[in-house]
Length: 573
Ligand SMILES: Nc1ncnc2c1ncn2[C@@H]1O[C@H](COP(=O)(O)OP(=O)(O)OP(=O)(O)O)[C@@H](O)[C@H]1O
Image 1 (cartoon, helix red, strand yellow):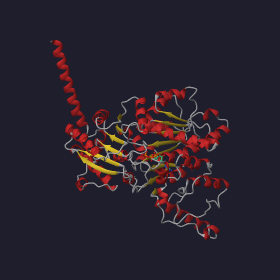
Image 2 (tube, helix red, strand yellow):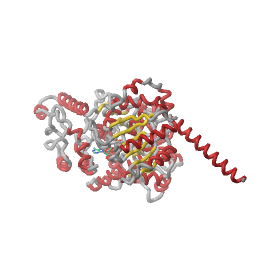
Image 3 (cartoon, protein in one colour):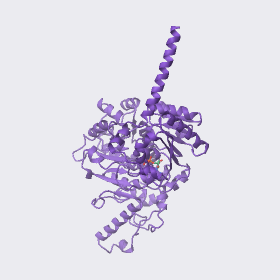
Image 4 (cartoon, protein in one colour):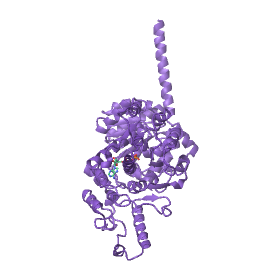
């Protein structure tokens, strides 16, 4: 997508606020700000956003008491939050809750006092205006608050945590250097955990890009800040070698980091910030729960008392009970920020994710082998009708099925590839790069790529196999139409979900989510009986499609046996 278009789209939130008065000079504007802010405002474009009641003459003159002013100030912040659908739990009780940013340039004013290089670097990498989640999360994290942030897919959560982390690390490095604490300078100061290798690589790339840009913009503190990836044995070896010595921000998958930690090859005692991206995935039973807990316990043990390690959770789908349960901490210790959703629940932020994408359900019969054939036919029909626009992501449930579907679709789609966890790292990396660069047009993949991956310009998502939960549906669909502002629908972004009789237990939950986002869902789907929670959880772990796989495996075994038998007979002969 063209950068100018992208910028215009991301600025849509501000641009849409026409019914609100224009922002005039306030204490943070050119008239009131120091020389540093002045520079900043000339360097990066002015925000168009304006809050409800603009500052009055009375406020400016300061003729009323401070309490009146702070009340008006609070009202303005609340108006901005309401307008951008930013919800902060218990906001009225949090007396020290920072205001949402009106623009990145606000970061140059008190209490943040950042160098103008920060907004300039963000502008240079096309982040001109903060997205809603960035507006509230960045100030909170900069002011040392632990954050739980739930915001739609593609809403810019990565920069929301990267900007404050980089700032903290830069400042900390500076202090440590001044105090000549060189040993500590070499050890990680912040850790970012991501559930997949691909997502960790993506975050690392964005972080490197931001750091590079900060150096170009002459932020002296950014020089020498090292962000390192730890997702393979080779990375671990690199970290031990001299050349790889010294790391400030460590971006890792839980399994790799935990294994290096157990071996004693990595020390996390001076880690001050841990970010769990896709936090709900991290704490899924049977996934990385124990490893993550081990890592969290190892972080910050060397810090002074009262200066414990801060833990921040990010996801598009996070449940209310998760925080106190998994962090072993009082729920109040975190500021909970929800963007776009009506409630802080299991499928929070669903509505806005799916609104960007046209959704359609395609019935493919009773399931089983015949259902598989019907799915391939359905894809062919959609191709013939020109309804599948490349690039496309095709989601299936298992590695075997990824191979099989890839083979089946390769006959119809040139530039089709498969990608799953059963492939080597280098192969995975190559396929992802090819998809990003446009060599691969249709990527058949498992849920390995359903979370966090920022593939610009994906026009179609095909749920070849029905998602195992509404949450998975939200994440899969969220890969399409990225870069489109909330409320706008791209003509090209579409999602097709194939379903058979076998998928019925999961159908209602997904249909409800789709309907909530304005998709045209047949009424009978919504009237289906709900499946009870326990069964839903079972299905999540053991997907409906295993029955199909089992049938296919049985047939393959039978064919193999027949072949062997035939070979055996021929040998005897
Ligand atoms: N302030 C901004 N202005 C313009 N573009 C932005 C801004 N912030 C982030 N982006 C871009 O938006 C895209 C989506 O961002 P990101 O990957 O952080 O979303 P996310 O919320 O983490 O999504 P998911 O939940 O799917 O992981 C990225 O390409 C990123 O560069």
